Length: 191
Picture 1 (cartoon, helix red, strand yellow):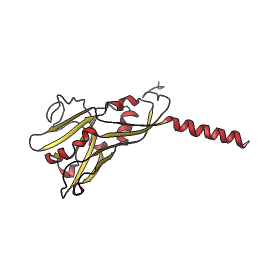
Picture 2 (cartoon, helix red, strand yellow; picture 1 turned 180 degrees about the vertical axis):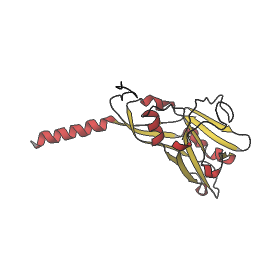
Picture 3 (cartoon, rainbow, N blue to C red; picture 1 turned 30 degrees about the vertical axis):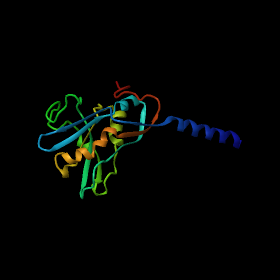
Picture 4 (tube, rainbow, N blue to C red; picture 1 turned 180 degrees about the horizontal axis):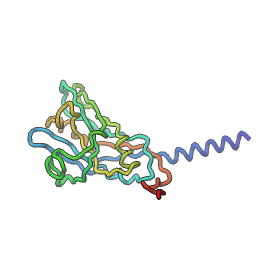
């Protein structure tokens, strides 16, 4: 009796892990916008993210990229937010393409990171699980990400930090997920 139970347990373990998957993608579109007074924000999209589809259940999503530049005796407080309006790197600007200057984004669904510049180099890491879940599991429209300063640090990024954060163009969005049957669309089965 022990043999069949052990085989069944192994089969379930193997089939369960076969449904788990992981992918890492880089930005496909990247833009820098500024207000003309030394305040910047960075925008990017990862087009492959949309390819996961509605049947993906996200377990974890993390965005990371390398920092560049020399050391500085300060800390940068960053906020990575989902963009809420469609944009194109070829035509976007601080005052162009948005309903409000500086971009349309959801600060309430942001991911935060604190970067100590006194160490030089290093890596910025953001847990973007709630943002990716909102797009892929809840059906929110996907328009990419916007990187800016946390409100305590002002309206946006300093010019000197844009160079330091240029590694964002080669960032890695690492998503761990499981695939299963397609979820019913919102309102399905209601009369």
